[in-house]
Image (tube, rainbow, N blue to C red; front, top):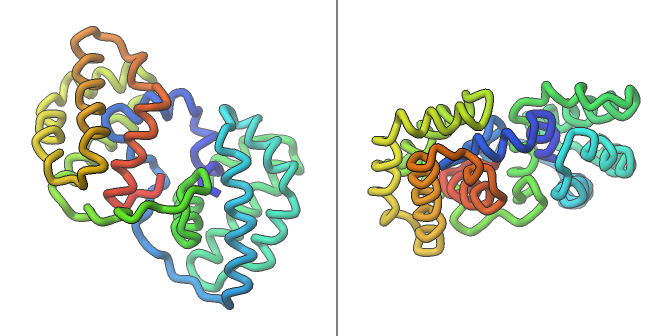
Length: 233
């Protein structure tokens, strides 16, 4: 149920802040401890994935709130079948926030769920849209590429608007150069996406136009880099 952390942060800005490599604030590489029977895990994850998939096309906090209203049975199922340990605690916090938002008809109650959605999704083996995590998930964790990816993400995510994202990239072009130099270390399936991110960032800097940084294609390519680095954004 990653959307509980990403939607309230303003999707348009989040997409722009993806910039070169969007490591969103709710990323997680951990398998997050949590146990339970196969049947309860299946019920828990089925409900979580149902919400993820239904909210994948949401473009505002209001849209996501509408999804939650239509999936209250899934919220109940997640609460009833939550695993023990850290993931279970996080799941219950997510459900509590979601139910509070639905009851108050106010999406602002979704703003304080932190990393919980990412950990829940990782536990269920999916990304924030309910798609199965790729085979390369977390395989780059600790690499030089992922280190520079994290640095770029920290800077772009700290920006308050698209102009700020572009300003960060323009003043940290050495990070872009380093990112580009490490592309050859990536799995072949990711190299073209990484190169597109570099080209997009360089073009945005050259034209002083941040609009290309917020496209769906850039967001998807950035998410794939994050997944490689173990960040389930």
